Length: 150
Image 1 (tube, rainbow, N blue to C red):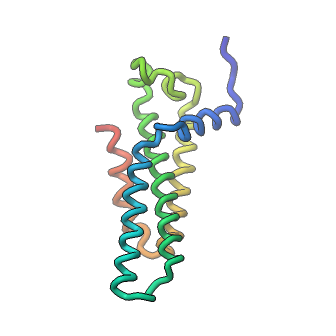
Image 2 (cartoon, rainbow, N blue to C red; image 1 turned 45 degrees about the vertical axis):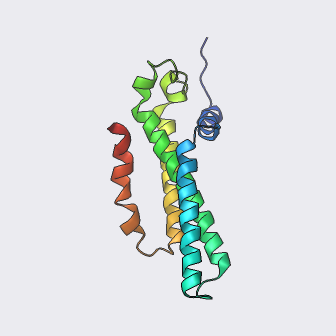
Image 3 (cartoon, helix red, strand yellow; image 1 turned 120 degrees about the vertical axis):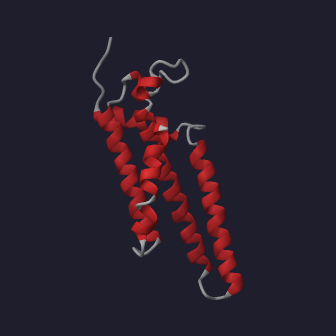
């Protein structure tokens, strides 16, 4: 017996997949590196030139960096699930994933991916105060989007 899923149920499936413990191992690793790198860069700046930036600015940038990485990794993982959906449907361990099982449409998944990606771009723009954002953002997009296809 199959029944059509409402938009809310579809979103719930995506969020359940995204927020499921263990699903975001890559995001946790990426965030750890990003947080430590941001804190170390801030500490180095304060050591070289005390008073050049407030400590609150370092913590703000660290939080923004954490959010940026977490959300961008989420977009990459949705992309990976979309690319692998046919393979995942044939593998016992992964065949129950929302895209592989058909419980979630590709349109909803790709919409969620774009929402995450655009949110990460907004966070990056805010974090960099709009300066040189595309210098940092654009080169990473092709690498991130083609990596799962290897």
